[in-house]
Image 1 (cartoon, one colour):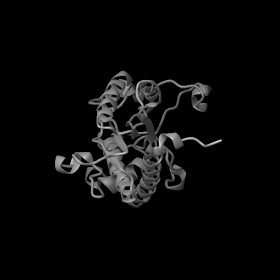
Image 2: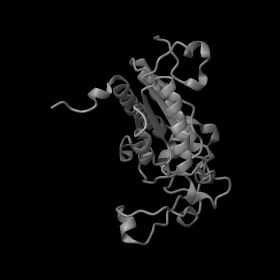
Image 3: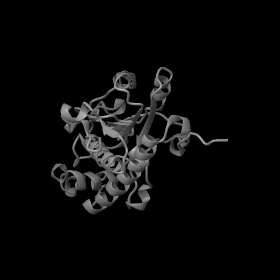
Image 4: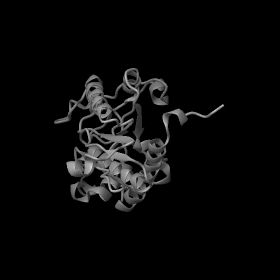
Amino acid sequence: MADRPSVLADAPYRDIRGAHYALAVLPWGATEPHNLHLPYGTDIIETDRIGREAVRLAAGRGADVVLLPPIPFGVNTGQLNIPLTINMNPSTQLAVLRDVVTSLERHRVPRLVILNGHGGNDFRQMIRELSLGTTMLLAAVNWYRSIPLRDYFDVPGDHADEMETSLMMFLAPELVLPLSEAGEGKERRLNITAFREGWAWTPRDWTRVTSDTGTGNPRAATPEKGARYFAAVTSKVADFFVDLAKTEQADLYEKE
């Protein structure tokens, strides 16, 4: 079925009932503030749009792939002091993910990729647990780690920074306030050396980390940078979707 839909939320049953998919993709974002100039739905918008373009590219190369509707809530335990941040605990995420896997199994979809767009989400241990009870291949992709940011942006950061601002300027400019409204995204780091070096970890208390909810200065952002980055990320993610959709589980590992 060459013309089968690749975005489930946009598709009528007429076009879905005869379709078969080798891979389903589940975008997963968060609802949280992004500095003073970006919308609370930034992670949702970015991840859904990246997913849509990546599955379009993959489907154009013959991959049987479908994008599921995005999950809008992520792990935000450290941001709950900030108004209208919505937290979904990891245990709740596991329950939601289990139900999605169970549903897809009934429809004989053999592979599921979680397309993650929020740094507070970590699906690896959930996938380990769910894999004990299913033959479905489960994987997770953090799209924001798929290509080196230094090749596209000047100022490092990890939340509402130059990268996210540039991306939103390209994807949804009508939702982005002028950069003159943005905070500088200054981050107050933990004092303990092991945390700074990254080999020890503790959740960040976001209201102590940043005054404007951003980490990374967005002032150098442009829509042109966002467009270039979007094209590179979606191409890289689409390559993965094609490889995974077309590779049988028996061929996942090298032969002796």
